[in-house]
Picture (spheres, rainbow, N blue to C red):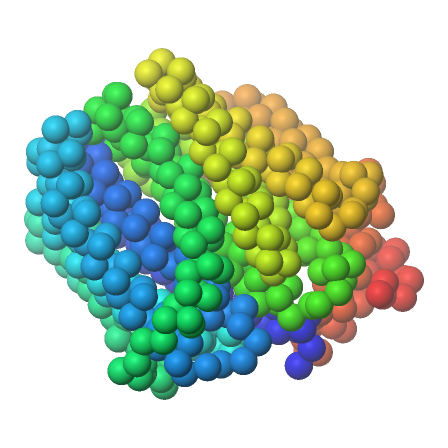
Length: 500
């Protein structure tokens, strides 16, 4: 199987896994959000933010070191395993002994028991990092997907049952703990490997040298993605954090489904390419194809966000609708930063990944300091401003290291944003003419208008970009789908041979 096909299949499986996990989690969250108040949701969210931040950091660095290594080495993997266990223990101790009193003092004492119950996740996550790295380097994404979906279903059932029985916030805690336990157990079994009772210092030193900048980058990146929510909670209180979280919850699912799978699968694919030009071209092709689909999804979500929030979560969360629109527009450029990070990591330029992420953190903290205290709308605007800043800076760094012209980069990405922004404007105009139609009718109507307008823009205004997308899709499509794509190309008037 070719590298392009491996990337396509891997992305498909990771998208399936992310979809299953996120949908189950989202359904549980909907049930609980309809039962609990914004303050109660805010208490749980703060603890979950802390734990999720630790999990992301634990997965950074060591896992990539396993993936990037040319050959599998038992001693190297064993040394990485024990190194990551050490990290997990340190994280657990820090959160338990330092995080708990800080949470009680600066946020709310009621969030402390939830936080202390969830810290065991650090140990469960630390155990499986090397095993998951082994699966990823072998492109065993089907195994990862089936594991994640099964664990999500079982833990989701536990969460829903507890929510319906009145356990409230603790239903979320039970879902998190049971899901992590199941994922860890299945990962250990699927990898078919267990560490030797051997720790080789020079292997650990190599892993530390490679992973430390990435782990620090993950720490900074995690702060970038969560610092605004922490600021909202600390400066505006648990109720405001609950409202802000509801506004971003569906967007986080979209990110998990359509953005993060590409982030996770791009590194193994790009790392296999040794030529600088080939790696740059592959990264740009991934950006072009994914932007063509992903950017309009986020802009379209912004169009229906207010109606979606009221319909799904209820009238008491109406204030979250406008926040969701702004966060959706700000989520579109995440793809650019993730792909640039993957390309730089594959090139061994991890310090530049660190520099990019540190720049984003500084800008986020500065904007958050001045804007969050003004209210939730300003917090969402700060999020949007920082994501576009990071995307632009990332492209500048990418151009510097890979020698691509800015003209090529702009032509690769900008058409999707122009078409999506135009589509969003058409949707907003359409909404003003729907009057008092039920929300269950307004949402599909707006979505239909958005999809139709984007299609027409692609055929009439951005025809070369649409043609290129279809040709790229045809070159990686499975044999069963290729005839349908050929017929679609013929129907649209794109009859040229596939571009190489």
